[in-house]
Length: 102
Image 1 (spheres, rainbow, N blue to C red):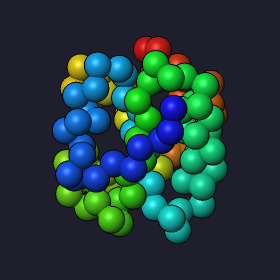
Image 2 (tube, rainbow, N blue to C red):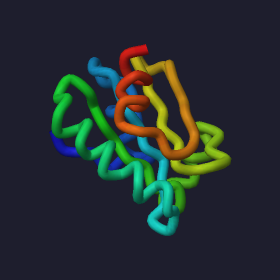
Image 3 (cartoon, helix red, strand yellow):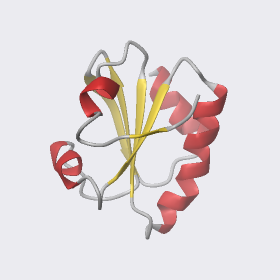
């Protein structure tokens, strides 16, 4: 399943997905973000039971503020509209999947 570009306009639809949601808060200039991005893409392609979205913090400052993003990359897992896990910094694919299963 394709990664969704999340904006303030479509956030409610994504957040209230019946599937678990993985959100990747990033910026184009961020080196660690560029390391996490391909892993998030792989997870999206391999796990269609998960909704995956990316949020560019420079383009979506309201969403970054709503989630209290102070450092990127920041990965957030939501289930039933609630945050269930949150990690800052690079994480290997196995750690990201563990967040989703936790």
